[in-house]
Length: 349
Ligand code: FES
Ligand SMILES: [Fe+2]
Image 1 (cartoon, helix red, strand yellow):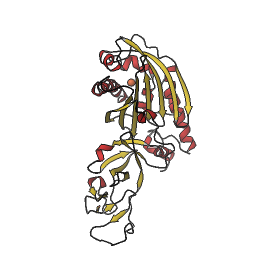
Image 2 (cartoon, rainbow, N blue to C red):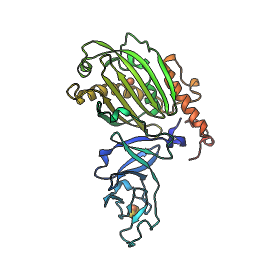
Image 3 (tube, rainbow, N blue to C red):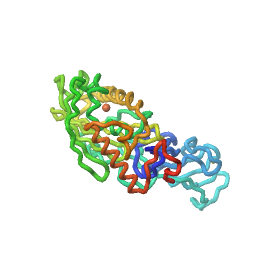
Image 4 (cartoon, protein in one colour):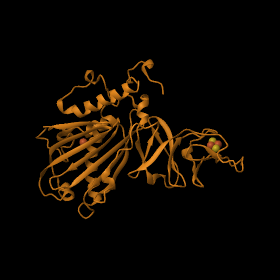
């Protein structure tokens, strides 16, 4: 599937940028191949507009904040959060705000969990709901925001794939001598699915500290939510009651590249587990994933995947993702577009 060629993928929310990055001025982002400018207006609302001024096509992300609005950096035309030109400095029109009539395309933007989320078209679902993020018994730790040269679907499949622990994570928590992928239970949801499973894992030195557990091995009891298409929340409960929820939200920049946001939500305190160590361990683990995922093919096949990729039983969550995404395309009248597709098979935007 080439994500930029499937219009229905525009109908989901994606976490595109930390809110703090927009404190001092607008910033560019490419989402599903579309260049947008992100900014925050004077009332603290976030906005996403096409990154091209309607005057002489300068990128609005080269502009600056002016009186709570966005000024183009070239000739200073002022835009509001709906993308409407409300003032042209060289041609003032007293008392006729927004009557100038020029406009650029505006997209939906909202802030959740410290990030700006954007939907390029009418969203099919809400931004994923993470109740623990608002629970005073939990704290939220931002882990990283970076570009991975891989498809969002590869990252999602990997996140629900117990079989990779023993190999990709053999230097961190995986038990190489025990490649058994365990059992998984999948419950369908309108927004994706919920998977429950449990896996034995190593408990390395750094984890002994941040989990408060001296054992050399432990068990991860996992409840993973897959939010179509490319966001997941993995709730890990350890035998001592420590909960570590990993939220990985990936925004497709283009067909080959994903912007990856990761934060965790935990039911402990800084005194129990310093955030720097929590981040350090998860960074080791995600670096292991990134290394292998960036070697995979980005044009992930959905409906006819079996002709191109071999299978084993533990691949079931990923197979289920492909089945659900293929169904989503069908329900919206789209054919899956692949690298090899004839141009006529592509669905118009
Ligand atoms: S190009 Fe933006 S104001 Fe002229
Ligand atoms: Fe992994």
